Amino acid sequence: MPVIIPQTKPPLYNGYESIGENPGKEYTMLFICYPKCTTCQKAQKWLDEKGVAYEIRDIKEDNPKLSELKKWYKKSGLPLKRFFNTSGLLYKSMDLKNKLQDMTEEEQLKLLATDGMLVKRPIIVTDDGVLTGFKETEWDDLIK
Image (cartoon, rainbow, N blue to C red):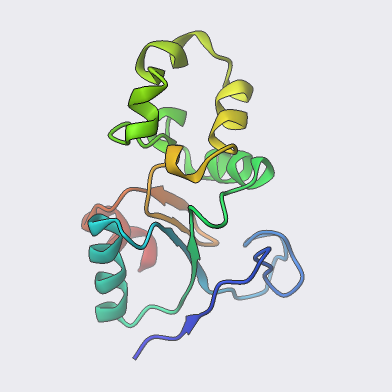
């Protein structure tokens, strides 16, 4: 049975703001999700079945901070657009499909930090990397 660490506000990893700030220390994986999201539920079930220990964080209740998003974006190597929930109602209502191209990277990150519903989920953060969305093969590669 995996160990699930209840969400804390703000999330701290042995006194450090983010996973990876204290070299040489082992941390649990951070799993950021929206509990009502079926993809997040599927990802959580997958983690549980693999016996992976993780800290869970509700993205709507505890939106990623700008400093976290900057670190995760850099660490992920992913295009910034992969951090946006492009199928979400808020993304569509704000017409971000047409607006993002005219925004700087900094403006986009600040926008993501304003509302968890703009952020692609689930997100996993480990010492080795960051992934957005749930693709089993990508998660398998990162968690090995």
